[in-house]
Length: 214
Length: 214
Image (tube, rainbow over all chains, first blue to last red):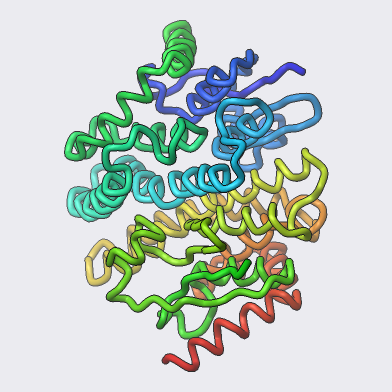
């Protein structure tokens, strides 16, 4: 059954692959599944056709037959459960992979999203710098805790899994902030993930789309 | 096999059940599983014994035999997969329940956490009011989108599921803000969930602990 995902018609990340469709593209490449892309223009996100796919008017969404999903974490988890390669068959390792997916999206991404909204929403405010410094201190705390657990390991929990896709992409949202460079084992973890052929293919696909529509 | 969860020795919510152990207690009550509680004192969160359970030094954690999990979303999902009653057997309904869990914890909770950190971290700053008004506008947007999708339905997707536990508890973090009262169908949804006997038992258990340790 054909898989269709929605992506931004024009992403605002200069082709850097920071939008959340990248997580889904990467997961689909890891499991070797082809997919179709449905472009959504900015002015269409809050219209009925897209709200029927995602009530919060965001990308990505995932359609396969009569199943429609939103939330990148849920989509990547669904792909990992449906196709082999991204989740261990061991029940405990599988539960821990899900744990790391939730940790990435709730515990690690929360202050990173806060940094983004402070960056955009508080632009021009006299207090933006003070506010961002407070957020950065919290992000540094979380990155330090994650780095301590990862140590010298290659991936979060044994073999590469869906959790690494989500965690690496969440961390990449800090690119340009200088915060990742302070934590060498996390920087190396991200570089290791980006060297995977599946990541490279997914990145090239989103970049080609950005080049075509810029 | 005995289940042990960690909870705050002294929660700071005046017994209102807003700490994340409430989600896990509620899920365990829904599936009828007994559990033990391990109290963690504030000064112990960043010590090795607790960091071994959760590298981010948070509660709740879940221990069962040689499996240790952190992240309330992952723990509730694990309980729902391990015991009957909180996830449909239909594969699509199950995928959508996971989708709503991620939506609650990433899309809905993100600005709510931001509100909490603005409330505490920016206390005494001249810009706190302006900042919180900006966040509240975003929360109102998300609540409106959620309310539009829920409409007059009883639960998020057909039968009550693990997703309703997470969503209701995330929304409850807005208690006292006045924001929930603006959205009658969400307020009714929360009230309906709180009327469940399993919720009542979980709430009473955390309240008894708070009363004993206050």
